[in-house]
Structure formats: structure tokens, C-alpha cells
Image (cartoon, rainbow, N blue to C red; front, side):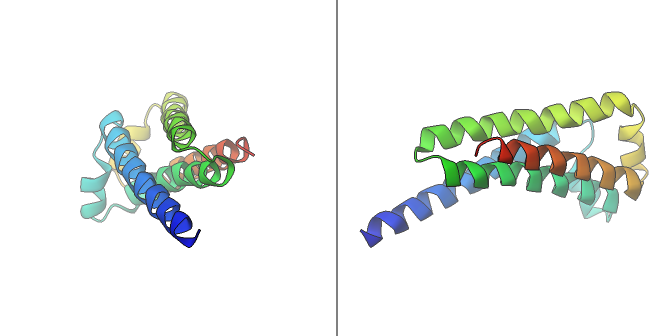
Length: 130
């Protein structure tokens, strides 16, 4: 019995890490700037933005693990969570067309706003799985 719990723990942990990796690649390829390079250069705005997206995405992964007993359902909800995060970015970048330039200028307020919006969408998305 214990081995089943350990197996499921490892399975979901590895699946979650893989999905976070996929999300990170897709998200950074979708945005017109490279958040990871900007973060390496010490730009706090990019860090706030990217961390909000990662945490928002991870909240839905956590909720999916808690509410589903199938790895396929987990993968489906992870894909939906990714779409929601990309949609949140898309909507905000339309509302604030200067978003890209402001992040590159290290406008921390804009980075925090984008991160907060991503986090908000992630919280709501995660709650919808209950």
C-alpha cells in the first residue's frame, strides 16, 4: 500500500516538473521578450512577471492533482491551465500595448501587474477544478 503512495507521489511530482518545464518554454516563446535573459540581467520586472505566471500555472497543477485520480485528467487540466495563462498575457498585452517595452525598461510596477494578473487567473482557474 505504501509503495503505491510513493509511486503516485513520484509520478505526479515528475509530471508536474515536466509540465512546468513545458509551460516555461511555451510561455517564454509566446512573449516577445526573453524573460530568463532579462532576469539574468537583473531585471526585477521580468522576474515578477514570470514568477506570477509560474505560480499561477502551478496552482492549477496542484488543484488538478488534488481533484483528479488520473494522470490523463491531470495532463488535460495542465494544458488548459497553460492556455489560461497565455490568454491572460494576451489580454493584458492588448490592454497595455506598451507592456513589452515597459518590461524591457524594467518597469517593476508593470512586471508586478503582469505577475499579479497571472496569479489571479491561476487562483481562479485552480478553484474551478474543485
